[in-house]
Length: 141
Image 1: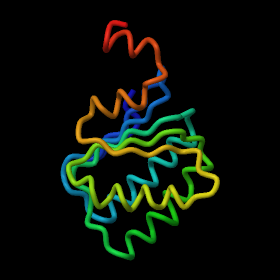
Image 2: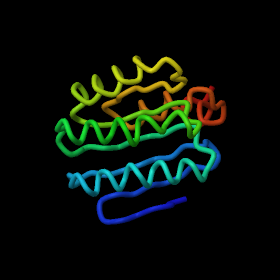
Image 3: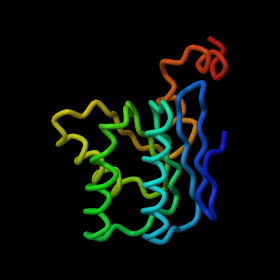
Image 4: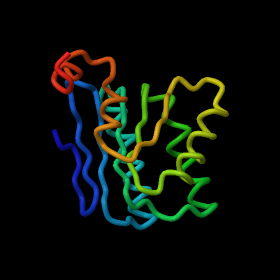
């Protein structure tokens, strides 16, 4: 079910898998990017979301001010909202992956796993690896 759609951003919730999928395929302004992160937190807080799939092919550039805001607002709140896994599908994986992974590794109380993928199907496989119905439909076993 699509919960939010505005310009270049779409947020969809899969109730059966408790999976929130966020997509944007064109570059976002820093303001739109921050609004998207706020909306993600709002939706995750309202629903029983266990996994987050970010399809962010063109994230805004990472400047120091934007990184501080993202760390203070988004990454500091993920613990309070019950997430277990975050997967990101993107083309520019190296830099962003290092930034988020190193931040999550520093967290003493982090129960959230983060992985980055080049293809959407790889992210789904990882996010839904415990879901027997998904595995049966995908692989027939």
